[in-house]
Image (tube, rainbow, N blue to C red):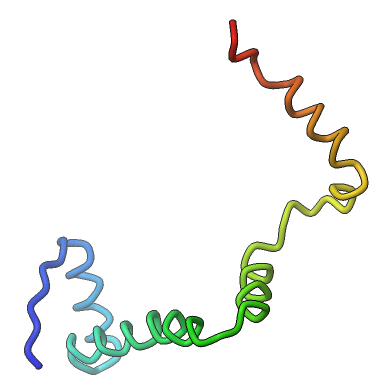
Length: 88
């Protein structure tokens, strides 16, 4: 199916270079890129909620602090003390 797309100069140059280096067409680069980027998104929609949560946790590993659960109230108080008073 024919398709038309407008690219900015930088993206167009990148596409041309990628096609030359891959020794393939710009159309094939675009098709492959869409498949690689969008297929995981489409497949994720088929996952159950626990699998989606697992993916989110792996993608965003957290703060690195191991004391957030045990010191949550204290940490929240510290954060609120550091913020300027919004009522002034």
